Structures are given as C-alpha cells and as structure tokens.
Length: 388
Image 1: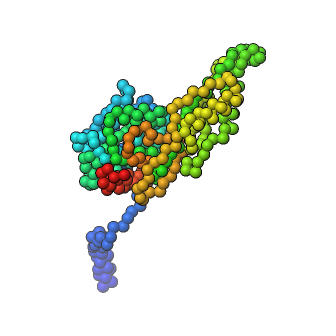
Image 2: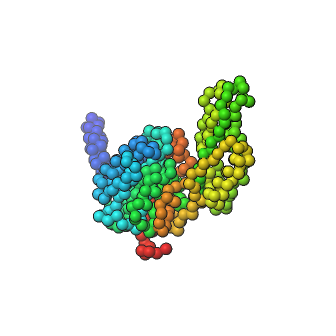
Image 3: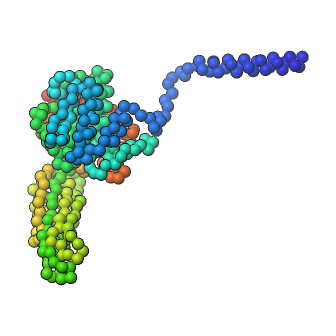
C-alpha cells in the first residue's frame, strides 16, 4: 500500500509540473507594465546619429556627410536638392512633394570643428565629434519630420529641411542659402540648447593682431625690436578693457584663441600675431572695434589690428508654450539667413561639451528633442498663414 501511495504521489507531481507552466504561460497582465529602457537600445534615430558622427566633416570637408544625407533623405521619400556652395561643398534641401515652398524650415549645420573624434557609445551616452554640435540636432530634426510625415500630421508645403556647411567658420553655407530665394513663416535652427528655446544669443566679432619688429641676434637684443614683446603688451591691455554688459545678455567676453611668432629662441622675433574673438553682450561691433583699437594703440605702436565682420546681440523668438527659455553665449547661423521669418533656436545637448575632447549627447536628450521639434512644428502650423 505504501508503495502504491508513493507512485500516486509521483504521478501527481509530474502532472502538476506539466499543467502549471502551461497555465502560467496563458495568463496575461491586466495592463502593460512599462519596462526600463535598455541602456544599449538602438533605433532608426540612434543609427542615423551614429552614421552622421562616424563621417568626418570638418569645416571645408563636408562632402561625404552631404552625400550620405542625400541618399538617406531620398530613401525616406523626400525630394532632395543639393545647393553648391563651393565646387566640392554643398547644402542639402529636402521637402515633401514637388514644390520647395513651405511654411516652416528646420535647419542645422553639418560641419564640425577639428579634430575628428570617432564615434563611441558608453551605455546611453553617445560620444564623438559633432555628436552634440550639431549632428544631434540634424538627427532629431529628421526624426521629427519623418514621424510627423508618417502620421499624416504634416504634408507637402508644411515643412522643409535645410542642412548647411560652413557654420563653424564664417557661415558660408547659410549665406549661400539666401540665393535659394525662398521665404518661410518660421525657421527653427538646431543647436545644443539643452532643449530650451533660445530667447537670444550674444553677437560677436573677431580680430587679428599683427606685431612688427626687427630681427637680430638674441645676444644683442638692443639691435632688434621684439615683436612678441609688443604683442604681449597689446594682449595685456585688452585684458584690462571694460567691456560692455547688459541685463538681457550678460557680460561681453574676450577669448584669445591663437598666438604665433618667432623662428628660434636665439633670434629676436620680427613678427608675431594673435587671433581673438569677442562675444558681444551689449552695443554694436563699432563699439568693440573702438575699444580694441584704443587699448592696443595705448599699449604699443608696433601692433596693427584687422577685424572680421561682426554683429551685435541677437534677439530670438520664443513665443511657443511648453519650453523653458535661455540666453546663449555662442553665435549661430541665425543672422546669416535673411528674411522676415520668425526665428527659433532649439536642440538637444549642452554647448558646454561641444568642441571638447569628450563631446557627447545623452540618448534620452536626443529622443526628447525629437518630441520638442514636433511640438514646435505643430504649434507653428496652428497659426493662420501670415499671422505675426
């Protein structure tokens, strides 16, 4: 009897082992339980961003990334044009349907500063040159455009894309875009703003200081005139300038970014030079030119100054609800695109890591920016055509 009970108990256990998993497998949750996103997840957005960053596109060498985008946007079903800027460089214009005309333009730049830094991913952080400035904006703008087009929220004539070359050095691409002779109600410029709407950014002006001396043997410095000494005096004088400031844009700042001079330690240098940039928070470029010239002239007669074109502080539209706003300390292509359009500035990531050895953007920031661009587009399209 005890032997029979043991067999019955064993059979019952085996039956339970077969039935219970099947019953458990047939059960469904009453609602979807959200899962934490995988830190290594990928998507068309992430793959596009990766492809863009993997292609070197230092200013002046943007051809390969332009060719890639032409192919990518064509595959999405857009009408794609290239606009030559130089014989080997071109802007990309893309839109739905046969007509260039659209109410909104999304735009950013394809070029980066040197040196090239290869793409790499560490969990949810995406590294590489241009990963934040500004290929994150390019990828997010395309993601927003594609998502709205697939859902039917935008159609031909609503939104166009423009990706330009040369923003990091003079804005040649955006200035060339004026030759397209197009007009829009609103233009959304993509730059790293930490997903805040820019309400303005500082202006700027650059200049070169060139010091002239007379070469001589360093054992007899009195026989020469040291150009580096003259340059140092001029630079020291500029550090003491009382630059203008404003409540809206903060402090005007000076950065000396390059210095060159001399040929050898045992030669009194005949020539030296420096290049600098001023971020203008108040006043116009004429004021900065005067302050620089006066400071240099008071310090030495051996240094001449040559200025680039400049621009004062740039106010930016920020009349769309749902965004924090900020004033940015860097320059953009906004002043280079002429027209009566509203001007918005928005994008993923922070400028604080742009141009740096560890330039990066967070994946979550990139994804959220897609939604931010969608919101901007939807809100602008709600307005009546021609409304201020």
